[in-house]
Length: 444
Image (cartoon, rainbow, N blue to C red; front, side, top):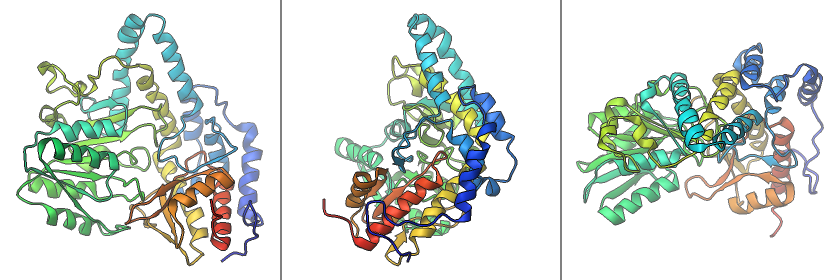
C-alpha cells in the first residue's frame, strides 16, 4: 500500500512521467483546439479526424482535452456520478435554447407545425445509428417511461408471473409491485453472481426460474448498481423458446459501449439519452420491434388507428419540441468521438482508479474487469466502510460526487467518470480514498 500523509488532501503522490506528459499535451495542444462555440458538425469532424486506434486514443490527453472543452462543467468539484444524469455539451444546450426560443414565437405554429415534424429526421438518424427501422423508434422522457410503457403495456391476469433479478432498478421493481397490489400478478426474483462473468450461468438461472405461469421477463442490459453487462441476446432467445416476452432495461448502455440494437435481437429496449449520449435532460428512447407494436399498449391513451404506429408511445399531450430536436446535436458529438474510442476511454479511467485502490487488501470490486462484462461504471467496496457515510464524506471533505450503493449483494460506492473527466480528478478521488483507508472515516 502507498504511504499516505494524513490531512484533508490525502496522499501527496509525486506526478509520474505519464501524468506530466498528459497534462503537457493538453496545454500544448490548446492552440489547435477547435472552437467549441461552433456547430456540432464542425466539432465532430475535427474529433473524427484525430488519428489513433481506440486503445491509443484512450490515453491521449490531447484528444480528451478537446472533448472536455465542449462541456461547461463545474471544475470546483469532481463529478463521478455521470451514470445518474450527464451534463450536455454547450452546443446541445444552445440548440435546445434556440429551438425553445423559436417555439415561443407562436407555439401552435412554430412548435407544432415547424419544429415537431423535424423530429422525424432525428428519429431516422437514431434508428440508423443503432441498426433498426425508424418506424420502431419512439422518443420518451427517460428509460423509466419506456420501461413502464412495456411493463404496463402487456396484458396480465391474476396469478400471472413476471421474472426479474434482485439487482434490477428500484423504480421498475416498484412498477411490478404496484401491478401485484392492483391486479394480483406475482413478481419473482432471482439472484445473479457479482460479478457475473459466465453468460451461460446467467441464462441458466433465468431459465431455471421459468414456470408455466411466467408471462414476462424484465432484465437489465447494464445493471445500474455495478455496471454489469448481461447477455441480452442469449436470454431473449431462451425466453422465445418458452414464448415469453423480454423487457430490456438499457438505461445505462446506449452510447456507453458499442453495440447495435439489431444485434441484440430483442423485441423492445428502453434507454435514457441524458446519460451516455449527453442529450438534453428528460430525453429517452423506446425501441419496439415493428410486429410487436400492436401487442403493447401505450402508457397514455392513443386512438385505435395508431395501434401499429410507434408514435402511439409519444401520445403524452403537449410537450416541447426543443428537447428532442437537440438530440441530433448530441448524436453528432457521439459520432465524432466514436463509440469505440468513448468506451476505451471510460475503461481507461475506470482502470486508473481501480488499479490504484486495489493495491490495498481491504478494497474489492463488485464490477468485472474482463472485456465485455462492464465498461465505465465501477462499484468499489472497502471492508468496514459504510457506502453512505463514505459518499457523504467524499462530498463534504473533498467535493467529490459519488453514488452510495447499499444493496446487500453489491455494497459499495459507484464510480462513473465521463469523457470530460481529467486524470487529476480521478487521482483526487484515489488520494481521498487512500487517506480514509489509512486513517478511517471521520465521524459525522
